[in-house]
Image 1 (cartoon, rainbow, N blue to C red):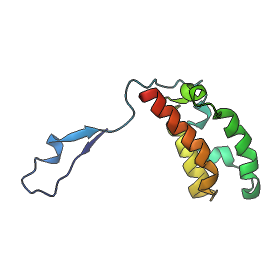
Image 2 (cartoon, rainbow, N blue to C red):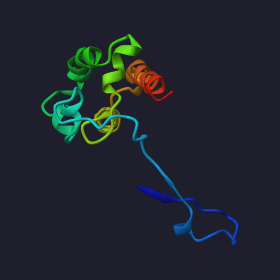
Image 3 (tube, one colour):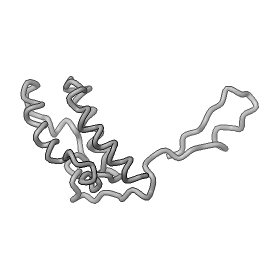
Length: 123
């Protein structure tokens, strides 16, 4: 996806002539539909359907703990791009916080570990 870089300078080149590529580097593997995160590749609301708000964290916390272990090197298989990669997990987290009003602080540790795994993989 190309996003134009805009400048306040009126003499700047037209937006189509200056662009930057946004997204994960191609060195990160493309996730397959049978990968660990594949279940997050669809509509995130379907993953919480039928779960009452008061049971949402108790239902998902153990599953997320199993998916996102404490040891950062063990997370490297999750560092993937594409529909069945990390973007699905990110959309699920957004759904939990924005749509289901889960306290975002509950996800801090899990998100932090995923970010550390990305850094470890990319660096």
